Length: 528
Ligand code: C2O
Ligand code: CU
Image (cartoon, rainbow, N blue to C red; front, side, top):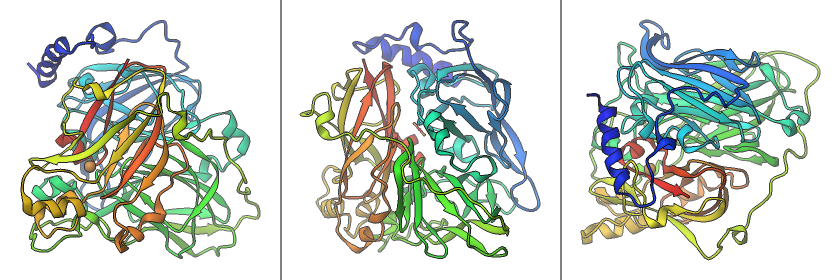
């Protein structure tokens, strides 16, 4: 019997024991299309083992989503080179059916990150299928225009499967966006940033020593759209860049090589109310940011690079006496991500709109019960990060994790006192994040917290450390748009507000440092 079957039997046992959770029809694997669902778009998406050329010389063995458009507007599916899945371009209101075939020799499941879809379509690890099986995802695109993505979400191996290649981008358009006339087609550039380490034989290296397990995997090579030293030829005009940090755990401090500010037009959940400029942007795993970049006025022959700037890699800050022997690049190292080579002079360019889309700004008072604040407290026990003191258990949720459907909830994510029990010597390190010992160092980690389901807004951010390391990154948070992932720095407390409408069932929330997620830093909300 395969793993998945074994797991499912176990889930059924769990489910039977959970009051209020019926593991019935609506929770079963959706293996065949529903004839009542009239799809506008049909896609075949296959996870397979294949080889691609990334570095000069030998091909690299990867896992890759390959796609085929079966029905729908041409342009729905755009191939990217290298190991990444095709970019899926959807329209708001479209009904999408995706036949997902698993051809890799282990269980796999696909999550549509950022999309508001029913539980059974959300890629919860309980829905993993075995090699040779099919899962049919059917959902209406409810999200507004923006940039989302899809990736494997398989129990305990998400990090490795994503690392090996199982990820791709999703773009959505809608009426409001079309009226804005933003740069489109060749002027609308997807940019997926990931770090990898290659063996001398050009194979992806993924082995975690204890330190890497704790801080997450950091590769020594930065890839953009699956390519090293990526250069994009551009004209002297404005472009839209859709950037996804698809890395397992690396957090980038993005900036332009000439020091000019970044013009931000969108975040995880879509466009901002109006463009905003930032000196740099902190982009954690799973976060997206959309940039407006205007090359007009630049000389053909010149270049502009998007870089990750140096900052204090928090997990390394305590350093002293560690001797962990990590062979990876520090979190906060400077490096070039992609270069834009200005190759062609053109005379006209679209103008940056003054306003983009209307956003209803929530305040705490908009919560269905403003007195209730759902906690997400980052903790740690026995070298494993947890949320509210618990690690992932497939169908488990606590009373505190029960959310009434069609409500708006305040949620407070705190990365303040990861509270290891005992150990007097460790206490100082945990609270202040600056103890000399190993515990202190490991605890003081940033965690990008992701909530499945609808996009949320950030109500407030309470910094913990008003020190120089924090000062060097604090202007890189975009707190004004729709988000599904928020970076919570050591010592920080971030309050968000999130609607839970339309769909009932289990929806995950977790750290999107994928090594942390696989380690169990993930829980379910039960929406009912
Ligand atoms: Cu992108 Cu539950 O993840
Ligand atoms: Cu984490």
